[in-house]
Length: 75
Image 1 (cartoon, helix red, strand yellow):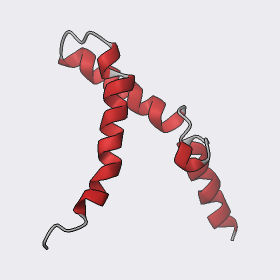
Image 2 (cartoon, rainbow, N blue to C red; image 1 turned 135 degrees about the vertical axis):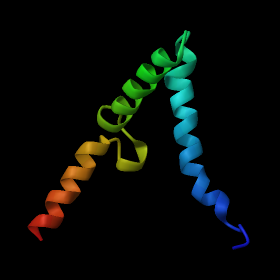
Image 3 (cartoon, rainbow, N blue to C red; image 1 turned 45 degrees about the vertical axis):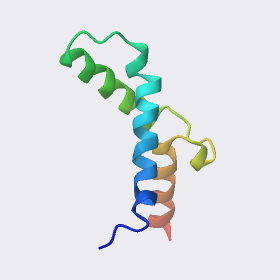
């Protein structure tokens, strides 16, 4: 493995971390690890359930996943 093209794999996770920091972490004055854990957990839940994603045509991830899963089962 020479590492060529690996940056393409990392783009998605780096964007996730950036969104987490900008939309949750930087907006709170975190006092301790427990508060940080709660804020991050709440944001991840929001990200996966309530936040529309442009890559999914502004649909919610759960809606896109379960719609695709039901379509595949019907086929």
